[in-house]
Length: 343
Image (cartoon, rainbow, N blue to C red; front, top):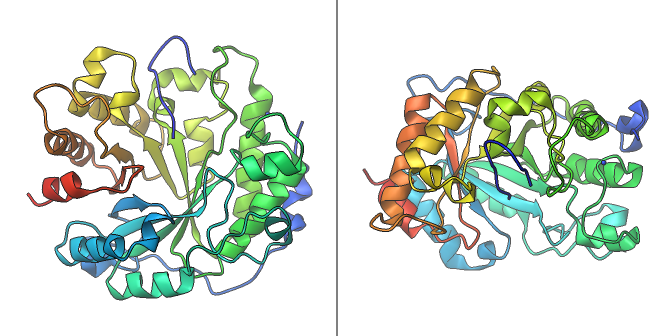
């Protein structure tokens, strides 16, 4: 999950409108959402709103202590959601997928049993979000004989593959499907030459919305820099427009990690960067914002503990009126977070 700069330097054809029918639309019972007004953390188990959650890798979930810690934190009222990888940055589909291409390219590793896991989490009142990494996919890229792990968002085979996985995930019992790496690679300069990239991202989401309508809540992880007003110019090589993506999903999760900024005044002030980014972005869209906050120790200012660093971000999110918030730690060590949430 990447970095973000407020200004200056930043860090792919079209898919046919019939993409949706590549996988078909499976009709199942509509997914219901209740209001959480006046509810406690455990009262809102069926609602998408007010979610406070942690990111968990499939590897972490193979360790019994990981689930024990999560269940304890939920019982103590600290969290009420988890984000679980169903397709990760290695190109692995972490459950025993029946999607033919996933099996053909060796992506279906069967590391987790989603139905059993979801049942246990739901029993504890925990909302379960499936995270699907889309267009950074080393396994698919190798199969397609591409020169690097990035697969173009406008590649029809990549689109069909990811939609097939998304459709399968929607049948497993997850409460929400969260798309990540729904973008082109970063690193090229800013400029008014990326219109096709923005269009490709939007077409994928339109296809996903059509295929998944009534089946599961959809969210998207975005670079934190999309929250800043210069994003309106559509000059970013990653092809993410806050307004256009927000119009196609149910929740937006910008990754507001203070350590990923170049400006020292942001790196050193986690409250300020989260508060200002949220103020700018939330003024532009009505779709609920549920940010990812930093719960790892990279570039924490001298004299500030990780616990204090996390608390500052939480305070900014709460004051901004976000619809919950999520926490990212790549090693899934949430010791400091749970202390911060104890207050």
